[in-house]
Length: 540
Image (cartoon, rainbow, N blue to C red; front, side, top):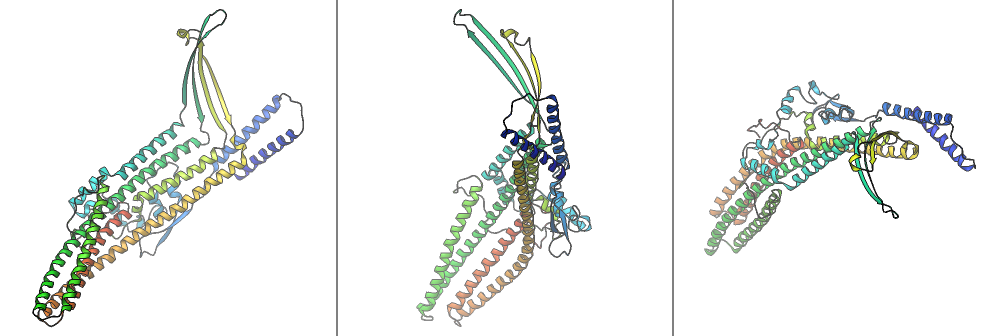
């Protein structure tokens, strides 16, 4: 291709040089000879043939993306051609990222996309309504209602429809365009005042021959942008599901904290009454009263903060429903305690292909590669067939009796602008290279999100066990200190301090439960909504 293009450039340079020399020397105009016309035609045909050869012989060197063959702990790694994701000439996008994150282009360890062979069943058993695995009917209804009325999701749907229409417009460029014009005139002479009428009807059809695949590339680019926009809508849907669930659980956590704080305030008020009675009897000093009152005031201040946080989260949840903030949605009084859904630890990397943001990035990478073709072929000769059928008559009734037809062939040679062509092609190539870098970054970010969620799942499980132990010991210590205070063995401050530690342990235990719920939803989201909804384990 390089040799043919260099020959073409030499021919163009020589033509431009001859034209410059001729313009500097005065000459007498002459009629071109038939021989010179034939030579010019042969030269143009040669250039067209050279460009056609370049168009057919072009091959882009696509980069490779090194990805792990399995999640953390697996010693095997693989380098996968990105061509598996972007250069499918059939336009099939069912492989896409699946091929990128697999091993050796498709298969992984034991032949199943990066993980052990037994994990393919999980990819096949993915439930589209994965949130139902949490076993909360109120949450199920909440998410269904949100998906039905959310404004952001509706706007994303409109963008998908617009992209579909634009793809349809690009597809029409491959079909002939037809126009019909009709005119009618009435004239009158100034001397004899004779009247004259004339009617004309003309139909024109034009069709650009897509010899180099430019129009097909434009159609493909528009179609891929439409599919990418649809993937964007799916990503927005997935994000909306995650946000709704997290707000729902956060409100449940705050309701639980408010109830616990109110209970602790009531308990501290009883302690204050006990301290005051003992102070009146002279059993304790005023220090115990002051310490208890300060402790009570601190808890009441904490309660106001919790109420404000709940109000803000309620308003945020109401907005998702296309409702005014004052119209609160259904909410839990406490955090759900049922078993969490378990996503199997041996997740195949193929599941990353389900991530809509990765699909969108891959499709736009395809579109950027198509734009390189569009830019390159836009400088190739353009052949346009034009046909006309027209008729004129002085009588409107006989306008169709004398039709006249014509057929023409148009030729445009934009490759004469050599420097412009080279610069624009290089610009489009840099855009493709940038898209490759962005895709690699998004892919690795997706991998890290799954790894982080898997690691957090294990650590939160261990943390939950320790939080439960800490809470039990705090309750036991509070019981012992209460008995000692009532027996007069200690002052009130050690008891109040232990009550503070007990409240902190209660909050930490509930926060860990909330974190585990959010982590499980984050894991589903990181996998593109993937998860085995039927695989629920009591250890979750």
